[in-house]
Amino acid sequence: MGCWEMEALPAQEAQAKLKETAIAILPLGAVETHGPHLPVGTDNYIAARVARKVAERVGAVLLPVLPYGQVWSLYGFPGTLSVPDSALVAMLTGIGRSLRDLGVPIFAIVNAHLGNQAAMKEAARVLEAEGGPVTFTFSHPGMGPVADQIRESPRFHPGLFHACELETSMMLYLAPEHVAMERAVREEPRVPPDFDYRPVRWSELSQTGVMGDATLATAEKGERLIEATLERMALILSAARRSL
Image (cartoon, rainbow, N blue to C red; front, side, top):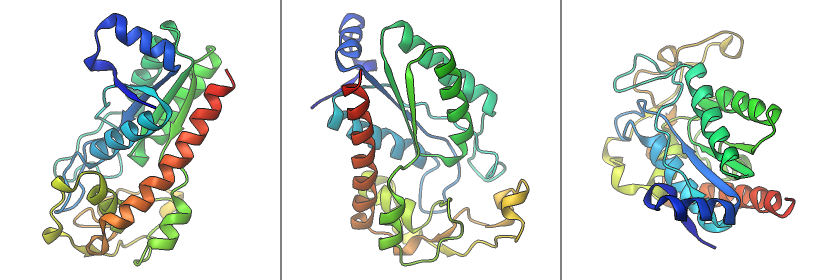
């Protein structure tokens, strides 16, 4: 297919590609601690490189990465920055409205930070109520079954992972130049029994920010995880474009 980086295109060409492809893809990340072996921009690297691969598969315009997210859970850890949900909702709805006014019917957010999910969903609902664009919010869709197959370490929560075997494997596949495996550690999170029923800062769970065994990560595991989510996203976006 093809991927067109919007920020690298002259205005008229950018507009033409947006109308031609009908899909704009936004990588959404965060700046937060990821233990001693991964950079604070891990979510940005994953979001940007996964979004590019999706854009290449479906033929879409790739928007510049939005590098800040809502990081309530890890706030206070070294190197962590956070914006409130309200600010993130405003940014996402503003981008969506701009795309709508440019005639783009499909807006896909490829998110690599689970703390952004509430804001993404709210923005998508606002845009739907306003008449579009159709907004898809992707946070590693389709990855679960593969993660269950390849994981050698226990998962600390059914729906969460961080700086562990899984996320480190993804980075080894997507951005190995930013991984220092010699510093990887294993830290089993101390999850309180009421974790799902009250706000819990992750400083209660971990000293390093690692939630599991990062030493078990491999690029091969990362490739399987990424391929699974790419397949799911490409299928959904291609079907959405066919339905226009």
